[in-house]
Image 1 (cartoon, rainbow, N blue to C red):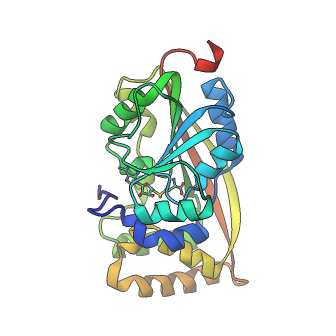
Image 2 (cartoon, rainbow, N blue to C red; image 1 turned 90 degrees about the vertical axis):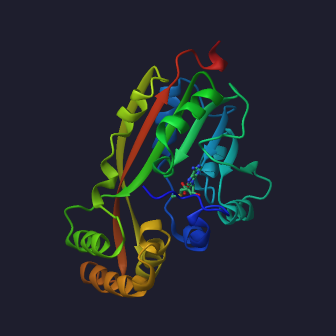
Length: 261
Ligand SMILES: C[S@@+](CC[C@H](N)C(=O)[O-])C[C@H]1O[C@@H](n2cnc3c(N)ncnc32)[C@H](O)[C@@H]1O
């Protein structure tokens, strides 16, 4: 797969404005599920949010009382994170070489970012920085509209126009990949569903924030014009209803969470 890191940061840096404006948040249920599997509340937990981007997940974790460090390779993404939440502990860094001491955190999170790392390397790093009983939690929001014509038309268009794009990239066996690393005692997969309503112009900005849409290059405006036309056929009032499926995979190290010892 293409790497997100560049010599100066991340391919997401050029997308940072579109990203900050329109990326969806995550349902609270994800954090409740993590607490249940971790066996402790997030309040007071030491958490690292890797690939933190503009800080969407970092802020949710903070709101639940976690002590969060954001780690992100892209300087522009980090700048948006700090502009939205001044003073938030954040550092430039990479999930494959975490800037943290061994055995110092309760939870390592990757929100919409785990597909960018080399799994054996990043899982090894997560296992290194976690305390006994701690967990690695990775999750995604995927638009789940496979039975809708507008979504099928979009995916056909992407497969034609975005080099290397395949709609089935969402079906990797993430839980098995984590089991195969041998670091974890338990790996749990959970899914959920939710939807949002988004105005067509914002919807197109959200499209622009995706790395595989940006990869269309010179034909990007043609792609967006075709999208506008096609999506408005399905939603003539200009309000797009986007159904999402969340996928959460939590991999727990052997041992007991520190707060319970
Ligand atoms: C789709 S964004 C997700 C951002 C944020 N977590 C969110 O929920 O909106 C993916 C992020 O992963 C970061 N990323 C890419 N490769 C990475 C790596 N090797 N280590 C850490 N982060 C990485 C990108 O810079 C980008 O900010």
